[in-house]
Image (cartoon, rainbow, N blue to C red; front, side, top):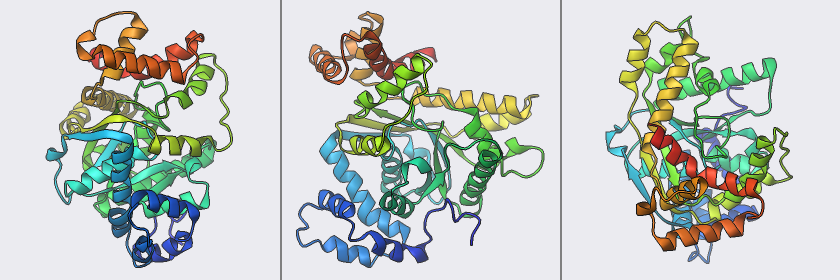
Length: 374
């Protein structure tokens, strides 16, 4: 038993046996029919049975699936900043988080296309409870973050995740992707949780835990979807939060959100790799601050980079103007784009419920607010 067996991806030696566990699953069949619609003889199945490494599985099956998702549900993906990354180099990517599956899948597709090290990626264990999804997640080099813990169990789980991340970055030269917060940002206001940064330092030995960030290359990443296919699904939770009520997820809510995120219309997408924060971390080391204060400062630096890296779409500017009842950004969108977005609002939320409308608009307007704040 390895100490990481409860959270880690499969080892290459385990890949073929894992594939054979799911190769006849109807969900995998549907996924591959979507990915390879011309493959009427299902030759993918034979190729999959002869796959023996995570990289081969990702490149030959996950990557084509992501390309098909982009083709069928978006108007294209654009990139920025990848030219500053070096081949054969491990990075810790801290990203804003919009979509359960696509954020990491798109990032890895971009890294692969640019000849860079693909990531092992954090995923909440609440999302991979179904056996098929759990196996598929481990084949896609995800590692699990346990959710819903408190007290000692939370500390032990966080330490284990931190140790796995340290091992990946510093011993295996494997890049790591993690969201800047626990779970997706529902309201569009991307803020780094200090708890995430503290978790990353737990495995650092000695009294100077912040030293972990001096050993790695930390890269904030901004992902911008023109339309969020799960926008209306987020509204009930946002309303509960605004009323200071506890929100209880419905049965299969995460799975429904996962499917909607993959298949729903996203229009245009942009991924921006922002500045590598090496110099900023060195500067923080020199400042006379406690470790908690340094983590807070680092969180602010990550936020600023993510906000700066947003690609602001017409949907963001329209939402801002509608929310504030202004015409400040009319140069950034056409009347047709505004009409299309207003139609989306009418289809997604009850327009007589001002709280629903406001939450929907804030979701799209927050990136504009944050970028203006810079």
